[in-house]
Length: 105
Ligand code: FES
Image 1 (spheres, rainbow, N blue to C red):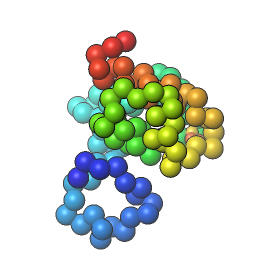
Image 2: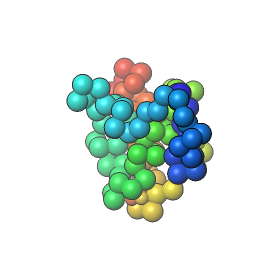
Image 3: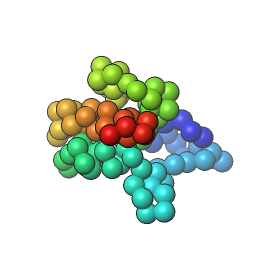
Image 4: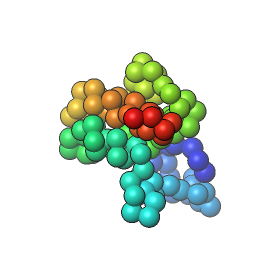
């Protein structure tokens, strides 16, 4: 229903009747969402285990704050853990997506 949640802590019955969007649902007509493209182009992932959660949380973050600072991005993603990247390229990806979604570079 337009709210990011941690799927790993939800029972299916809790979302009975809700509209659910997963990482697969972000792309439209075979075109990656700008956040997916930004993660790809900025090497925001390594093993990819954390990536769906990072991307979904980042898309939700930009709905409320379309131009977050690096600090706001790091704070917004603090509930998502990545064991590979050190977060630098994840933050860079979110920043790039924010610029792209605002019609920037
Ligand atoms: Fe491997 Fe994040 S890319 S856990």
